[in-house]
Length: 278
Image 1 (cartoon, rainbow, N blue to C red):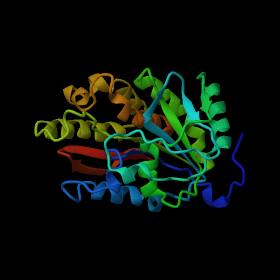
Image 2: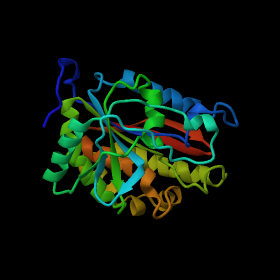
Image 3: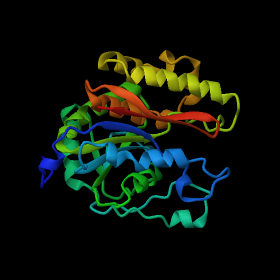
Image 4: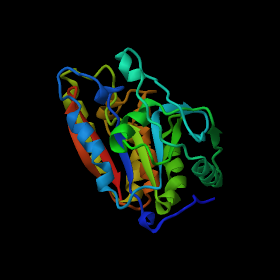
């Protein structure tokens, strides 16, 4: 199944992106110190100008949805899922009224099933903050259909690369594949001066890895916890690597496209980066 109304403006192959989504609704509230999230916000706002064409749809893999099987939102008008806690009241009134993408859900289901996976569609799932927070900055008009995709509860790195490979044809169909997470996500490490060198070491490993030819890149990512040395697990503790695995999905979807680090900033004492393939 293909999406309707394909335009010549969206025939360029889309890149795949791994982006940071910040801390809860950080971009839409006061923060101390002020300006903590400004550079990250500017990077997210600049995404549309970096693309070869306006996306016909967005397939976003969120760190905040784990499921036993690859799952996806299928509502025509997804609601909002405020899955953060303890933030100012106004941040629970944020709205991202983008249309859903039920036709794209069918297309993705076919692709995943063809790869031997067992996809599920969820007509009730709303946009969680791994989706709506960065999209409110990158695509504030909320006029591009969005398909939200889960990670796997297994947290198996190789399986997420495999999932991404199944999505690769979408790039030729005007669909922008985004993985939304944080390249450093040890909650106990934020603000700890000892974390700076750890995050830098892991960030350098990630930058080297994504720039490798696809077979080497995928092999290293599949074994990231060992291949990256102690900095990897100190950046993403065991059982809590859900903020890293969206990178594996978009790397798998990239195929042979070259990868590179396209943004980095030191936030809350650690290095946080974004990566692009293609």
